[in-house]
Image 1 (cartoon, rainbow, N blue to C red):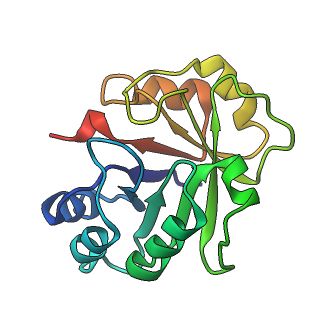
Image 2: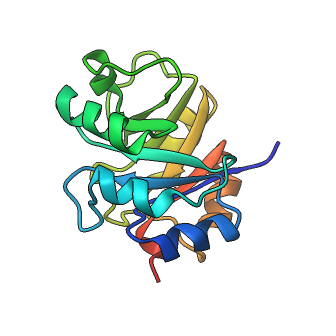
Length: 173
C-alpha cells in the first residue's frame, strides 16, 4: 500500500505545480482564517493546470453552508476537509469526498473510514502525540497532520503507521 501525501496551504501556481511535480496525491487550499487563506476564485485559478490524478482539497473550519456552497460552486474541489461535526449541517454532494478532521484529545465516538488527525490548532506546526495517533490509526485510514517535517516524518510513519500524511508550514519554502 502506498502512502497518500497531501501538501496543504497552496497560495500560488508555482507552489501547486511544485507539489504536483514532487508527487503529491492531494493539494490543499485553505478557506479558513489563516495566513494561507485564499478565495475560491484564486484557488480555481492556481489549480487549473493540475492533472486529474491530484486531488484538490478545500480546507475549511466550521464554515457556514453558504460559504461552503461558494467554494463548491467556484473552486469545485474533489474533497472537503473540515471538522467532523461540520458534516452534520453542510450540504456536501456525493461526488465530493469527505475528510473529517479529528483533533488531538477530542472525544471520538465512531471513527470515520478515512479522516485527518491533527492537533488542536491547525496549520501551526505543532507536533501531536504520536502514541495517541497510533492507537487511532488502527481504527481507520488516518491522514496524519501536525508538525510533520523532513526531520521527523520518518519517525512519525514508523510509530503511527498512517494511511497518509498532510504537511503545510514545514514545506512552505
